[in-house]
Image (cartoon, rainbow, N blue to C red; front, side, top):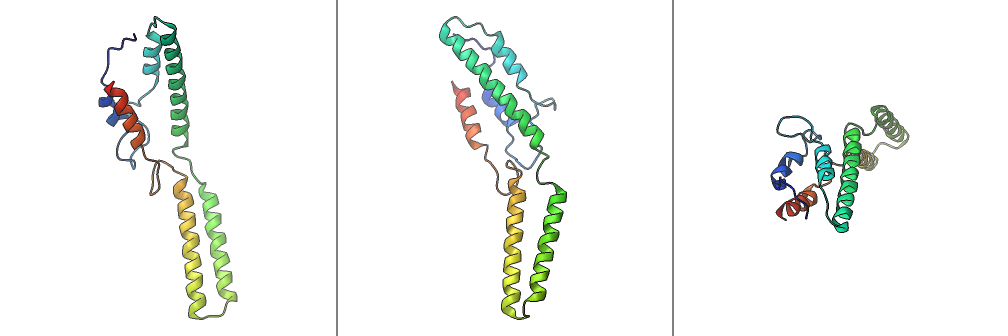
Length: 158
């Protein structure tokens, strides 16, 4: 069967997946340098499978680790991205101009002012949600890392 000297994977989970999602998005190890998949891939390549089933498992593990490396690369490249500030500034200016125009052409009474305020609040909330969803791992609405933590914890128990 496969032999691996280091079976303490659950101890690495807090290091790779911080519980505080508001911090830095890049995973770092104890020495402060960025964590990488290359050592895991090197260990996978160093294994010497005895049977065909083990060779298939080794090739599948290498494929999965390559997919993880690709996803990590995409994640680190898109962390700072989001909506361009110029687009957001033009959108806010356009919406402000639109609501000022509505306000100038509408009669001045409490109903119109209330409706304009409610519509402006609704548009502002929609714009906020769009900006918040541009960063799926941070913000009010974010992707949870709990399923990944659970899977890594169960892998470490075996």
